[in-house]
Image 1 (tube, rainbow, N blue to C red):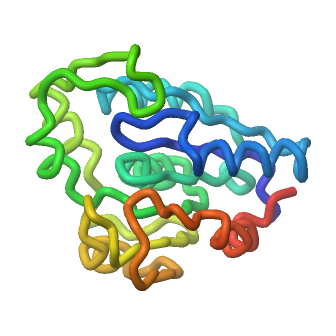
Image 2 (cartoon, rainbow, N blue to C red; image 1 turned 180 degrees about the horizontal axis):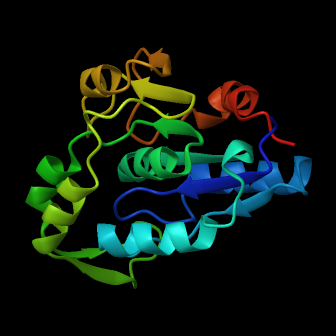
Image 3 (cartoon, rainbow, N blue to C red; image 1 turned 30 degrees about the vertical axis):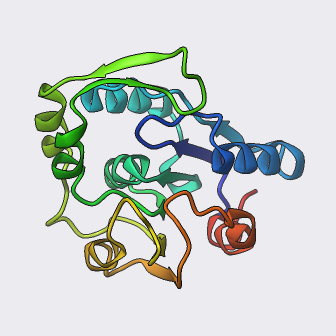
Length: 194
């Protein structure tokens, strides 16, 4: 079934103003104006973030929704897709954010708005662990775009974590997937937007 509802989840310190989120938003709004688009600003608490997202998508039809997630948003997207049993696109997803973000406890600013500050609390590490689904098989189709040149996360962990996914392994590349536009057609084919 074609996708009529599309959710985009950004990464740590990111926002709906990220290049990938804006590219997707613009494409959906201009080419598929009937598709429901949601790209919320996520709070720093993983538990609060997932509660907010699930409240916003609770009435979305699982068979016709999809979620796209980048970095930490990919970890979240995995969780949302599992519970909504919907398609997921994972862009350099964080596999063990409870490990990688332990070094980031403290004060931070948003990449896209340095005036926006937040505190990443130690309790959030346990919240991340509670969202882990490492032993769970996928409940619907997944597409993973994993860059070998990711300077933040290890693409090998991504490939091992998502064995059931259609995997696009990029030679080189970077964490931000700076050449995102060149992968858009593959993502859109997978999403099959209405």
